[in-house]
Amino acid sequence: MSSENRAPDIPAQLARPLSEPFAFALLTWPAAAAAMHWSSADDLAWRVAALLWLALFHFAAYGRGRGAAFGNTMLLMSGVVAWAWGSFPEGSTLAAFPVLLIGLHGAQRALLRRQHAAIGTLHAAVEDAGPSA
Image (cartoon, rainbow, N blue to C red; front, side):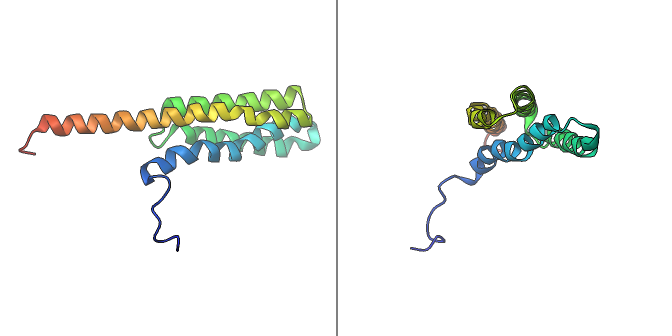
């Protein structure tokens, strides 16, 4: 059976809220750990680049209808990663990062809650407009 005939596993309206937290984590967590890892004067340019990367992605986390809950969650999670790597720069810290998936789940719930509230507002506006709309 070809993949074209199969129905998608995740509805299109859920694909973005489910994938964005993981995409943000994959793009920001290494930069957060790197910013804490590079501390010598020789690595200043790399550290500034990592911090700039983090700043740009965290500004983006607050934009495009994602809301403050999503942005705050992503910022907090990057801070935890940076703190963890700065305090305990070893392999066990890398093994503990999957625990932060709980935070990703919180970000997903924030996105889905915001999306559900927007849909509820739309339905209420349509009902208030009545049959003449």
